[in-house]
Image 1 (cartoon, rainbow, N blue to C red):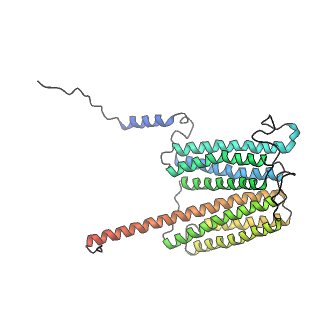
Image 2: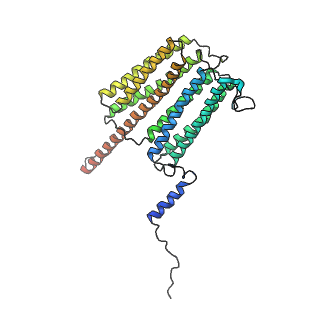
Image 3: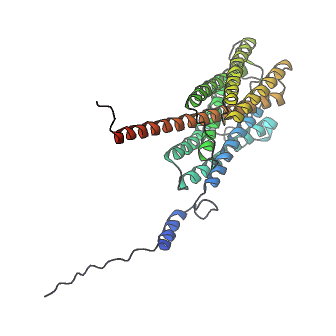
Length: 353
């Protein structure tokens, strides 16, 4: 008597059917939105650039709020007034300006969500990309809370300074995401020594850029543009703080020139980026000098704040590009050492331990 196997074998699923099944699963709720069903590298890159632009934009509009004396145009937070989220007519222009700036935060939120979804839904996104997109998205409400605290403390200059520094942090993180998601292939330095030197100098520039920007916020906290006529100042001498800020700028100029000359002499691919940073730094210095000599006119102060954001982008970009060269050079060096070791073993002359 023969016993037959009652199990049935399933025929292998065709590639087309598997592809359709994967596409269906990826669509989900946001898959019907153009571009989000299966985001391309260029699509994600576009969202990353948008996120960087809006984070720079909120720095400029926040500066406009302070310079027009509208920092307390909405005297409380999260509401604009007690019992109302929108300003009333009695608050006048200052209330409208401050309320408008608060509404721009929602633009940041929408762009952050779009970027987060694009990064998470893209097949080629790394864990680092996902963590970065999440950190930026979480940073926006945290930044809004610090802004609210600054209002509740009547624009305490140290809280306002922290608010600006956090904005710069988001700009720097957004720059990292743009760099990581860029579909463009960047040339790399083959000279390991040059790559290490460039990486070290770029890190010095990045750290000194942060220090210069922070001291700039302290200068602002001691100066006339408090954001409101009754807002307190930090009590420091504006002249002394301005001189300290200028000293940091002089050191930063020297480092930037060192990087630019090094990159130029060694024919490094970062030469153009280094020269752009030097140009931005020179322009920022000119604007800063003129605004100080002309009693801080509003347009120049806003341009100076925009320049700070652009310098942060430039410093971050230099660190990332030089850093990627150093990692690439180390990988190549390790590969050569492994090849030499294999060759020695094949020849039988490998050292005996």
